[in-house]
Amino acid sequence: MPWTEKRLCSSCGLCSIQAWPVEESISSCVFTNGWLGEREKNLFGRERSFEDPIELRFGITTERFTAQLKQPIAGSQWSGIITRMATRAYEEKLVEGVVTLHCDPDHHFYSLPVLAKNSAEIFASRGNKPVLSPVLQSLESAWHLGMKKILVIGAACHLHTLKDFQKRFAYLQDMEILTIGIPCVDNISRSKWPWILERISQSPATALSMEFMQDFRIHIWHKNGNVEKVPFFSLPEELADPGIFPPSCMSCFDYLNALADITVGYLGAELLPKEKRQWVLVRTETGKKLLQLIDGELERFAESGNWECRSFVQKTSKRIIESMKVRQKEYSVKRNIPLWLGQILSTFLCTIGPKGEGFAHYSVDYHLIRHYYYVKFRYPELLERVVPKYVPVILEEYGLPL
Ligand SMILES: Cc1cc2nc3c(=O)[nH]c(=O)nc-3n(C[C@H](O)[C@H](O)[C@H](O)COP(=O)(O)OP(=O)(O)OC[C@H]3O[C@@H](n4cnc5c(N)ncnc54)[C@H](O)[C@@H]3O)c2cc1C
Ligand code: SF4
Ligand code: SF4
Image 1 (cartoon, protein in one colour):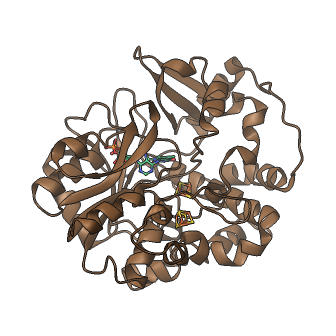
Image 2 (tube, protein in one colour):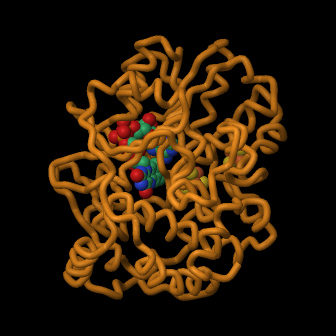
């Protein structure tokens, strides 16, 4: 179901399932029930602590560290920790199938939902698809096949809706569902993707993958091995329009996928040349079990960086609030800051700016401030329903108005 002006929808795939009424799927939708709250309590027996500034942002964890596979998997997004963990879970018979995505053969940036039923199909699911993706659609195949143990790899909206649906309705209650989460933010609808890529990259036709990086640049990997690095500051002004992102993703309040058994990203890891360090947040006993499957294959590092990032968030928050308020602005096609100056600014910020867990702290706070004011000014009727309780606590820390 595509998102509409009236109803937020991230096209998670649950409503495409024919095996049960769509009204039941919608009643479990994260945009019906809101983020975290009861769902966090159902999983952990409690909600995140408001007294612990780290848990407040990163969610409940039992262990956090950075790591990379000693033998990275070619074609994966980073070193391939997720793909390897999923493969080992299948080989060790922890699961019979993996609900995930393949690349669309006609367009490698787009996704196709898949129930991967062997190691080759799991391997083929590696890599990023930077568009809204109906991951949950393949639950239907697993259900028809009578599978009793599956792994779901998804973004926060997938896992919120899935967990609620499994608890609320009988269909999946005798299925053991393990979950690996990706951090997710700034996702894009398929219809807007070509327009956006053309404005970011100087060679959109050869782009293979893209990521917003900790060095304040967008990295675009090309077919010939080149990595194009575009400073955030030098993007054409029209890309600052909040309307380029789906309203669902601008109303998203779980960047770090706090209901996953284990979250695997990169934003809290150090960015080092020629390394592919990832950030691992183990949340549950099942997450620990998944991690143990590949522990011997990992090169591990402690989290690094200085937690403090208050002045950086404060410098940008006023501008964010203003840009969420404005509805009818004409955005220029020009870059306000030329590329050469943007590169200098990115390098400077990289030197003095937050790193490691400080960068993760900054990025979580930046996005939750942006999303809170997006909902407040554009969907005020949804404010109470979708915004979780931890958000006002953080806004208050910065003295920002509710
Ligand atoms: C839109 C988007 C934004 C992201 N933003 C951040 C970020 O800001 N910070 C950060 O640390 N990480 C982010 N990630 C996650 C990151 O890109 C990697 O997926 C993650 O670090 C795992 O790397 P890996 O090498 O272990 O993945 P791989 O082993 O390559 O496995 C990646 C898995 O993710 C699945 N996947 C890919 N795209 C999607 C999608 N659109 N929806 C659901 N599942 C998908 C793949 O099918 C595969 O199973 C983002 C991902 C997406 C899709
Ligand atoms: S996000 Fe998923 S559950 Fe919610 S309306 Fe869209 S497809 Fe349905
Ligand atoms: S940004 Fe949020 S709503 Fe959008 S796809 Fe990612 S997890 Fe889902």
